[in-house]
Each structure stands twice: as structure tokens, then as C-alpha cells.
Image (cartoon, rainbow, N blue to C red):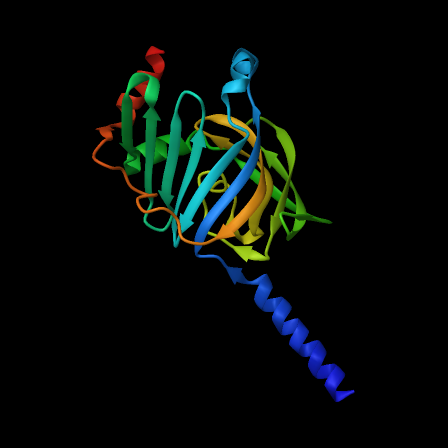
Length: 220
């Protein structure tokens, strides 16, 4: 009986350790379904089916590749650092936008206002135990399901930043990327070294302001 009890305790300790696993460096691959407005439906083929996120410590970089451009959203929530890197081959241009505190406050005005209600339903996503939550977005009065896990702890990225970390790590959820809605599902979390320079701009990038970026977008 004593051996059985010790075995049970050992199993519980192993399970608890796994449940609190912190992954400090690696890559997340998201499968995405873009939620485009009617006027953008004809451009649907230009939006990639996957988004890759590189993370290390408190820094993350969400990379979205399309036939026309590559966008990388870099952030560090601890230092409130946020930068956007744009590579547009057809224009022969690379732009870097470092968002000031005022810029970030301006962007937050357009953030969703989410109310999250935990449920009881569970399922497995990408090998992790996930629990269903119901999320209501106040501004649009819409509701969607989101699935969170507490099996793993990973720093926030531009897709998950709208959710309080207390619910766990989001595995399937609705989010926004560069102003466009999407449904994201974690396909894989891979621990390991990320490429050097993942969170910074090289000298090839032209530094512009958020105001200049918005002016460029409005001219299109």
C-alpha cells in the first residue's frame, strides 16, 4: 500500500510539473481563417493560411507572409516595446515603425472589449488540454468560443495580447492582425532557438513614424 501511495504522489508531482511548464524560447505555428469584410473577399487568396510566431523571454514576433509582403509584429509587454517591420518586394521597400506610447494608446482605442466566461467543456489541441471559454466582444456585440490551456506558459504575442494571461495560453480563439479579424488555432509549439535578429530591424529598413504609415495606407 505504501508503494502504491508513493507512486500516486510521484505521478501527481510529474503531472503538476508538466502543467506549469514554461517555454521560454521557440516557435508557434498558427492555422488561421481570415474574417474579411465583403469589400475584401476578392483578396482572400492573398492572405496566408498560417502565421508563425517567434518568442524568447518576454519578446515575441508574429510573422505574416503573403505573395505581396511580409509583416512582422514585434512586442515585449514587460517593456511596452512594439515595432512593425514591413517588407514589400514589389515596391523594393522595407519599413520599420517603432510605436511610441502615444501611438500605442491610439491603437488601443480600436482594441476589442472582451468579456471571458469559463465553461466546463474540454478537448485536446496541439497535444495540450484545453478548456472552453465563451468570449463576448462588447463593441460589435458578437460572441465566440475560445480555448485556453494551463499546460504551458508562453509570453504574449500580437495575436494573444487581447486576452488576460490568467485564463491560460490561448490555443483556439478569435483575434486581430493589422486591423483584420481572424480565427487562430495553434498547430504546433516548438521549443528551441529562434533566428538571430528576430526582434529587431536591420539597416535595410527605413524608419518611419506611425503617422507616416497611416498616410501611406490612406493613399492606397
